[in-house]
Amino acid sequence: MKAPRELISDPARLQPDTPWLDTVWAWTGEEELIDHRTKSRLCGAALLPFQEGQPDWPGFLASLRWMYRAARHFEVEFVPVLNADTGYIFDLSDVLYAEVLRRFREEFPGQRFIAGVTARGAEQDAGFQAGRYLPLLDIAQIYDNAEVMLMTSRHLCALEPRQRRDAYYQIAEHVTHPAIVHALEPAFVPWAAPFEPWLLHQLALHPKFVGGKISTLDEPHFLYWAALCRSQSLDFVPHSGDDFGLATAIKMGLPLLVGAAASAAPLLCAAKDMWLLDSVAGKRFKTGSGRFDTRVYKLLEALQSLEDQVFRLDVHDRASAYKHSTAHVLHELGIIGADECLPACRDLRGADEPARMVEALRRPRRVAGKLGIPGLGNIPFS
Image (tube, rainbow, N blue to C red; front, side, top):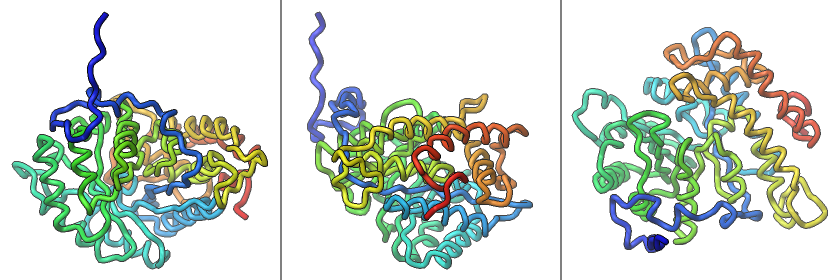
Protein backbone atom coordinates (compact mmCIF):
# COMPACT_ATOMS: atom_id res chain seq x y z
CA MET A 1 0.00 0.00 0.00
CA LYS A 2 1.39 3.40 -0.97
CA ALA A 3 2.15 5.62 2.03
CA PRO A 4 0.27 8.97 2.04
CA ARG A 5 2.49 11.87 1.14
CA GLU A 6 3.08 14.66 3.62
CA LEU A 7 1.05 17.74 2.74
CA ILE A 8 2.36 21.26 3.40
CA SER A 9 0.48 23.12 6.13
CA ASP A 10 3.08 25.79 6.97
CA PRO A 11 3.30 28.70 4.48
CA ALA A 12 7.01 29.01 5.30
CA ARG A 13 7.55 25.71 3.47
CA LEU A 14 5.90 26.91 0.27
CA GLN A 15 8.05 27.41 -2.81
CA PRO A 16 7.02 29.55 -5.82
CA ASP A 17 6.31 26.40 -7.84
CA THR A 18 4.52 24.41 -5.11
CA PRO A 19 1.20 23.16 -6.56
CA TRP A 20 -1.99 23.42 -4.58
CA LEU A 21 -2.41 19.64 -4.49
CA ASP A 22 0.76 19.39 -2.36
CA THR A 23 -0.89 21.45 0.40
CA VAL A 24 -3.50 20.66 3.05
CA TRP A 25 -5.61 23.58 1.78
CA ALA A 26 -6.42 21.75 -1.47
CA TRP A 27 -7.90 18.88 0.57
CA THR A 28 -10.00 20.94 2.98
CA GLY A 29 -13.70 20.23 2.58
CA GLU A 30 -16.30 22.96 2.23
CA GLU A 31 -18.10 21.49 5.24
CA GLU A 32 -15.06 22.29 7.41
CA LEU A 33 -15.44 25.99 6.56
CA ILE A 34 -19.20 26.37 7.03
CA ASP A 35 -20.23 29.67 8.66
CA HIS A 36 -23.84 30.44 9.62
CA ARG A 37 -23.01 33.67 11.49
CA THR A 38 -21.14 36.00 9.13
CA LYS A 39 -23.20 38.29 6.93
CA SER A 40 -20.62 39.01 4.26
CA ARG A 41 -20.93 41.67 1.61
CA LEU A 42 -22.20 41.22 -1.92
CA CYS A 43 -20.00 42.93 -4.50
CA GLY A 44 -22.15 43.10 -7.61
CA ALA A 45 -20.46 43.64 -10.97
CA ALA A 46 -22.72 46.22 -12.62
CA LEU A 47 -23.72 45.90 -16.26
CA LEU A 48 -23.25 48.93 -18.47
CA PRO A 49 -26.37 48.69 -20.67
CA PHE A 50 -26.71 50.15 -24.15
CA GLN A 51 -29.61 51.41 -26.22
CA GLU A 52 -29.36 52.42 -29.88
CA GLY A 53 -25.60 52.07 -29.65
CA GLN A 54 -25.15 54.52 -26.77
CA PRO A 55 -24.78 53.96 -23.01
CA ASP A 56 -28.19 53.68 -21.40
CA TRP A 57 -27.50 55.87 -18.38
CA PRO A 58 -31.05 55.72 -16.95
CA GLY A 59 -30.90 51.93 -17.28
CA PHE A 60 -27.46 51.81 -15.66
CA LEU A 61 -28.68 53.74 -12.63
CA ALA A 62 -31.96 51.80 -12.50
CA SER A 63 -30.12 48.48 -12.39
CA LEU A 64 -27.96 49.75 -9.52
CA ARG A 65 -31.03 50.96 -7.62
CA TRP A 66 -32.58 47.52 -8.11
CA MET A 67 -29.54 45.85 -6.54
CA TYR A 68 -29.44 48.37 -3.70
CA ARG A 69 -33.14 47.78 -2.94
CA ALA A 70 -32.56 44.04 -2.73
CA ALA A 71 -29.62 44.52 -0.38
CA ARG A 72 -31.53 46.94 1.87
CA HIS A 73 -34.52 44.58 2.01
CA PHE A 74 -32.32 41.79 3.39
CA GLU A 75 -29.85 44.07 5.25
CA VAL A 76 -26.91 42.86 3.19
CA GLU A 77 -23.94 45.15 2.57
CA PHE A 78 -23.87 45.82 -1.16
CA VAL A 79 -20.84 47.26 -2.93
CA PRO A 80 -21.17 47.75 -6.69
CA VAL A 81 -18.24 46.85 -8.90
CA LEU A 82 -17.92 49.37 -11.71
CA ASN A 83 -15.96 49.03 -14.94
CA ALA A 84 -15.14 45.37 -14.49
CA ASP A 85 -15.74 42.76 -17.18
CA THR A 86 -19.53 43.11 -16.80
CA GLY A 87 -19.00 46.79 -17.50
CA TYR A 88 -16.85 46.14 -20.61
CA ILE A 89 -13.62 47.43 -19.07
CA PHE A 90 -11.50 45.96 -21.87
CA ASP A 91 -13.45 47.92 -24.49
CA LEU A 92 -14.06 51.22 -22.69
CA SER A 93 -12.17 54.37 -23.58
CA ASP A 94 -10.66 56.26 -20.65
CA VAL A 95 -13.30 58.95 -21.21
CA LEU A 96 -16.20 56.49 -20.93
CA TYR A 97 -14.52 54.73 -17.99
CA ALA A 98 -14.40 58.06 -16.15
CA GLU A 99 -17.98 58.87 -17.13
CA VAL A 100 -19.27 55.67 -15.49
CA LEU A 101 -17.63 56.61 -12.18
CA ARG A 102 -18.78 60.23 -12.38
CA ARG A 103 -22.41 59.32 -13.01
CA PHE A 104 -22.36 56.72 -10.24
CA ARG A 105 -20.96 59.18 -7.71
CA GLU A 106 -23.49 61.86 -8.67
CA GLU A 107 -26.38 59.43 -8.12
CA PHE A 108 -24.93 57.67 -5.05
CA PRO A 109 -22.72 60.26 -3.35
CA GLY A 110 -22.12 58.37 -0.11
CA GLN A 111 -21.84 54.82 -1.38
CA ARG A 112 -18.71 52.73 -1.52
CA PHE A 113 -17.73 51.18 -4.85
CA ILE A 114 -15.02 48.98 -6.34
CA ALA A 115 -13.45 50.09 -9.63
CA GLY A 116 -11.93 47.59 -12.01
CA VAL A 117 -8.43 48.57 -13.16
CA THR A 118 -6.34 46.84 -15.80
CA ALA A 119 -3.41 47.46 -18.17
CA ARG A 120 -3.97 50.02 -20.92
CA GLY A 121 -2.20 50.05 -24.30
CA ALA A 122 0.00 47.03 -23.62
CA GLU A 123 -0.82 45.12 -26.80
CA GLN A 124 2.55 45.81 -28.47
CA ASP A 125 4.65 45.67 -25.30
CA ALA A 126 7.40 43.08 -25.10
CA GLY A 127 6.70 42.43 -21.43
CA PHE A 128 5.01 43.65 -18.27
CA GLN A 129 5.01 47.38 -17.48
CA ALA A 130 3.43 48.50 -14.21
CA GLY A 131 2.81 51.94 -15.72
CA ARG A 132 0.09 50.49 -17.96
CA TYR A 133 -2.15 50.29 -14.88
CA LEU A 134 -1.70 53.94 -13.94
CA PRO A 135 -4.21 55.69 -16.27
CA LEU A 136 -7.20 53.86 -14.80
CA LEU A 137 -5.78 53.97 -11.28
CA ASP A 138 -5.47 57.75 -11.59
CA ILE A 139 -9.10 58.04 -12.70
CA ALA A 140 -10.51 55.74 -10.02
CA GLN A 141 -8.46 56.99 -7.09
CA ILE A 142 -9.74 60.56 -7.21
CA TYR A 143 -12.85 59.26 -5.40
CA ASP A 144 -13.15 58.66 -1.68
CA ASN A 145 -14.86 55.62 -0.20
CA ALA A 146 -13.67 53.39 -3.02
CA GLU A 147 -11.57 50.30 -3.63
CA VAL A 148 -9.69 49.21 -6.74
CA MET A 149 -9.61 45.73 -8.22
CA LEU A 150 -6.32 45.06 -10.01
CA MET A 151 -7.58 42.94 -12.88
CA THR A 152 -5.16 40.55 -14.45
CA SER A 153 -3.58 41.13 -17.86
CA ARG A 154 -1.68 39.06 -20.42
CA HIS A 155 1.86 40.26 -19.65
CA LEU A 156 1.25 40.06 -15.91
CA CYS A 157 0.06 36.45 -16.19
CA ALA A 158 3.07 35.51 -18.31
CA LEU A 159 5.45 36.15 -15.42
CA GLU A 160 6.78 33.39 -13.17
CA PRO A 161 5.38 33.47 -9.61
CA ARG A 162 8.24 35.42 -8.02
CA GLN A 163 8.29 38.00 -10.83
CA ARG A 164 4.50 38.22 -10.72
CA ARG A 165 4.67 38.95 -6.99
CA ASP A 166 7.15 41.73 -7.65
CA ALA A 167 4.93 43.09 -10.44
CA TYR A 168 1.92 43.32 -8.13
CA TYR A 169 4.10 45.05 -5.56
CA GLN A 170 5.20 47.52 -8.27
CA ILE A 171 1.57 48.35 -9.05
CA ALA A 172 0.90 48.71 -5.31
CA GLU A 173 3.42 51.56 -5.12
CA HIS A 174 0.84 53.65 -7.01
CA VAL A 175 -2.20 52.39 -5.06
CA THR A 176 -3.72 54.79 -2.54
CA HIS A 177 -6.98 52.90 -1.90
CA PRO A 178 -7.71 49.41 -0.53
CA ALA A 179 -6.95 46.99 -3.36
CA ILE A 180 -8.28 43.61 -4.40
CA VAL A 181 -6.05 41.39 -6.53
CA HIS A 182 -7.62 39.28 -9.26
CA ALA A 183 -6.83 35.87 -10.72
CA LEU A 184 -8.34 33.93 -13.62
CA GLU A 185 -8.31 30.31 -14.64
CA PRO A 186 -7.40 29.55 -18.28
CA ALA A 187 -11.06 28.58 -18.82
CA PHE A 188 -11.75 32.30 -19.24
CA VAL A 189 -8.82 33.23 -21.48
CA PRO A 190 -6.03 30.86 -22.59
CA TRP A 191 -3.25 33.05 -21.21
CA ALA A 192 -4.66 33.25 -17.68
CA ALA A 193 -2.70 31.87 -14.73
CA PRO A 194 -4.30 31.27 -11.32
CA PHE A 195 -2.27 32.08 -8.21
CA GLU A 196 -0.03 29.38 -6.84
CA PRO A 197 -0.29 28.97 -3.03
CA TRP A 198 3.06 30.72 -2.52
CA LEU A 199 1.97 33.70 -4.62
CA LEU A 200 -1.41 34.00 -2.90
CA HIS A 201 0.27 33.99 0.50
CA GLN A 202 2.80 36.60 -0.60
CA LEU A 203 0.08 38.92 -1.92
CA ALA A 204 -2.06 38.40 1.18
CA LEU A 205 0.82 39.73 3.31
CA HIS A 206 0.95 43.06 1.46
CA PRO A 207 -0.76 45.77 3.54
CA LYS A 208 -2.47 47.41 0.53
CA PHE A 209 -4.12 44.19 -0.64
CA VAL A 210 -7.23 43.69 1.49
CA GLY A 211 -8.56 40.76 -0.51
CA GLY A 212 -8.59 38.89 -3.76
CA LYS A 213 -11.04 37.61 -6.34
CA ILE A 214 -10.63 34.29 -8.08
CA SER A 215 -12.65 33.72 -11.25
CA THR A 216 -12.89 29.96 -11.57
CA LEU A 217 -14.81 27.37 -13.60
CA ASP A 218 -12.84 24.13 -13.51
CA GLU A 219 -10.82 24.05 -10.27
CA PRO A 220 -12.03 24.88 -6.73
CA HIS A 221 -9.44 27.61 -6.28
CA PHE A 222 -11.81 29.71 -4.17
CA LEU A 223 -12.02 26.83 -1.71
CA TYR A 224 -8.21 26.61 -1.66
CA TRP A 225 -7.95 30.34 -0.99
CA ALA A 226 -10.53 30.24 1.78
CA ALA A 227 -8.84 27.30 3.51
CA LEU A 228 -5.39 28.91 3.40
CA CYS A 229 -6.51 32.36 4.54
CA ARG A 230 -8.69 31.04 7.35
CA SER A 231 -6.10 28.57 8.65
CA GLN A 232 -3.49 31.34 8.86
CA SER A 233 -5.90 34.05 10.13
CA LEU A 234 -4.75 36.31 7.31
CA ASP A 235 -6.02 39.87 7.10
CA PHE A 236 -7.02 39.21 3.52
CA VAL A 237 -10.53 38.28 2.37
CA PRO A 238 -11.11 35.90 -0.56
CA HIS A 239 -13.99 37.02 -2.81
CA SER A 240 -15.64 34.36 -4.94
CA GLY A 241 -15.79 35.03 -8.66
CA ASP A 242 -17.35 31.63 -9.35
CA ASP A 243 -20.67 32.21 -11.12
CA PHE A 244 -20.99 28.44 -11.54
CA GLY A 245 -20.66 27.83 -7.77
CA LEU A 246 -22.52 30.64 -6.06
CA ALA A 247 -23.51 28.61 -3.00
CA THR A 248 -19.95 28.00 -1.79
CA ALA A 249 -19.19 31.57 -0.73
CA ILE A 250 -22.60 31.93 0.93
CA LYS A 251 -22.07 28.73 2.92
CA MET A 252 -18.62 29.84 4.07
CA GLY A 253 -19.70 33.36 5.02
CA LEU A 254 -17.38 34.96 2.45
CA PRO A 255 -18.06 37.74 -0.06
CA LEU A 256 -19.18 37.23 -3.62
CA LEU A 257 -17.78 39.45 -6.36
CA VAL A 258 -19.78 38.28 -9.34
CA GLY A 259 -21.56 39.29 -12.50
CA ALA A 260 -24.43 37.08 -11.35
CA ALA A 261 -25.50 39.87 -8.99
CA ALA A 262 -26.47 41.97 -12.00
CA SER A 263 -29.17 39.44 -12.93
CA ALA A 264 -30.00 37.84 -9.57
CA ALA A 265 -29.29 40.29 -6.73
CA PRO A 266 -32.59 39.60 -4.87
CA LEU A 267 -31.95 35.85 -4.91
CA LEU A 268 -28.36 36.22 -3.70
CA CYS A 269 -29.34 38.58 -0.90
CA ALA A 270 -32.19 36.32 0.20
CA ALA A 271 -29.90 33.28 0.20
CA LYS A 272 -27.33 35.10 2.32
CA ASP A 273 -30.08 35.94 4.82
CA MET A 274 -31.64 32.45 4.92
CA TRP A 275 -28.26 30.80 5.55
CA LEU A 276 -27.83 32.71 8.83
CA LEU A 277 -28.84 31.52 12.28
CA ASP A 278 -31.79 33.31 13.88
CA SER A 279 -29.43 34.94 16.39
CA VAL A 280 -27.66 37.03 13.73
CA ALA A 281 -28.80 40.65 13.92
CA GLY A 282 -30.97 41.82 11.06
CA LYS A 283 -31.96 38.38 9.79
CA ARG A 284 -35.24 38.68 7.91
CA PHE A 285 -36.14 35.01 7.42
CA LYS A 286 -36.49 34.10 11.10
CA THR A 287 -37.27 30.41 11.57
CA GLY A 288 -38.29 30.47 15.24
CA SER A 289 -36.04 27.45 15.79
CA GLY A 290 -32.80 29.37 16.25
CA ARG A 291 -31.42 27.62 13.21
CA PHE A 292 -31.01 28.58 9.57
CA ASP A 293 -33.82 28.27 7.03
CA THR A 294 -33.30 24.97 5.20
CA ARG A 295 -35.46 26.20 2.32
CA VAL A 296 -32.30 28.01 1.28
CA TYR A 297 -31.16 24.82 -0.44
CA LYS A 298 -34.01 25.04 -2.94
CA LEU A 299 -33.36 28.75 -3.41
CA LEU A 300 -29.69 28.05 -4.14
CA GLU A 301 -30.66 25.43 -6.71
CA ALA A 302 -33.06 27.82 -8.45
CA LEU A 303 -30.50 30.63 -8.36
CA GLN A 304 -27.81 28.42 -9.87
CA SER A 305 -30.17 27.15 -12.55
CA LEU A 306 -30.64 30.76 -13.72
CA GLU A 307 -26.95 31.61 -13.73
CA ASP A 308 -26.03 28.36 -15.47
CA GLN A 309 -28.07 29.69 -18.39
CA VAL A 310 -26.84 33.28 -18.17
CA PHE A 311 -23.21 32.06 -18.08
CA ARG A 312 -23.62 29.03 -20.35
CA LEU A 313 -20.59 28.16 -22.44
CA ASP A 314 -20.52 28.78 -26.17
CA VAL A 315 -19.06 26.49 -28.84
CA HIS A 316 -15.59 27.71 -27.82
CA ASP A 317 -16.26 26.82 -24.16
CA ARG A 318 -16.34 30.50 -23.21
CA ALA A 319 -18.91 32.18 -20.99
CA SER A 320 -18.09 35.74 -22.06
CA ALA A 321 -21.49 36.29 -23.72
CA TYR A 322 -23.05 36.34 -20.24
CA LYS A 323 -23.18 40.15 -20.56
CA HIS A 324 -25.67 39.86 -23.41
CA SER A 325 -27.76 37.35 -21.45
CA THR A 326 -27.69 39.68 -18.44
CA ALA A 327 -29.03 42.51 -20.59
CA HIS A 328 -31.86 40.24 -21.72
CA VAL A 329 -32.73 39.36 -18.10
CA LEU A 330 -32.78 43.00 -17.00
CA HIS A 331 -34.83 43.95 -20.03
CA GLU A 332 -37.32 41.16 -19.30
CA LEU A 333 -37.60 42.43 -15.71
CA GLY A 334 -38.33 45.94 -17.02
CA ILE A 335 -35.23 47.47 -15.45
CA ILE A 336 -33.38 48.57 -18.61
CA GLY A 337 -34.76 49.81 -21.91
CA ALA A 338 -33.01 47.45 -24.35
CA ASP A 339 -31.14 44.15 -24.46
CA GLU A 340 -28.15 45.52 -26.37
CA CYS A 341 -24.42 45.09 -25.77
CA LEU A 342 -21.64 47.59 -26.27
CA PRO A 343 -21.39 47.97 -30.08
CA ALA A 344 -17.79 46.69 -30.18
CA CYS A 345 -18.68 43.55 -28.23
CA ARG A 346 -18.48 40.38 -30.31
CA ASP A 347 -19.73 38.00 -27.63
CA LEU A 348 -23.41 37.91 -28.55
CA ARG A 349 -26.23 35.44 -28.03
CA GLY A 350 -28.66 34.35 -30.73
CA ALA A 351 -32.07 35.66 -31.75
CA ASP A 352 -33.77 33.19 -29.39
CA GLU A 353 -32.14 34.68 -26.29
CA PRO A 354 -35.22 36.61 -25.06
CA ALA A 355 -37.23 33.36 -24.94
CA ARG A 356 -34.33 31.47 -23.35
CA MET A 357 -34.02 34.02 -20.54
CA VAL A 358 -37.79 34.01 -19.91
CA GLU A 359 -37.51 30.25 -19.54
CA ALA A 360 -34.42 30.55 -17.32
CA LEU A 361 -36.31 32.94 -15.02
CA ARG A 362 -39.32 30.63 -14.64
CA ARG A 363 -37.99 28.48 -11.80
CA PRO A 364 -36.35 31.33 -9.84
CA ARG A 365 -39.56 33.37 -10.10
CA ARG A 366 -41.57 30.39 -8.85
CA VAL A 367 -39.29 29.89 -5.83
CA ALA A 368 -39.16 33.65 -5.15
CA GLY A 369 -42.95 33.77 -5.16
CA LYS A 370 -43.23 30.91 -2.68
CA LEU A 371 -40.63 32.46 -0.36
CA GLY A 372 -41.85 36.06 -0.67
CA ILE A 373 -38.65 37.32 -2.29
CA PRO A 374 -39.28 40.65 -4.09
CA GLY A 375 -37.61 42.09 -7.15
CA LEU A 376 -38.24 39.60 -9.95
CA GLY A 377 -41.48 41.15 -11.13
CA ASN A 378 -43.66 38.99 -8.91
CA ILE A 379 -43.43 40.79 -5.54
CA PRO A 380 -42.56 44.49 -5.18
CA PHE A 381 -39.95 45.77 -2.76
CA SER A 382 -41.46 47.04 0.47
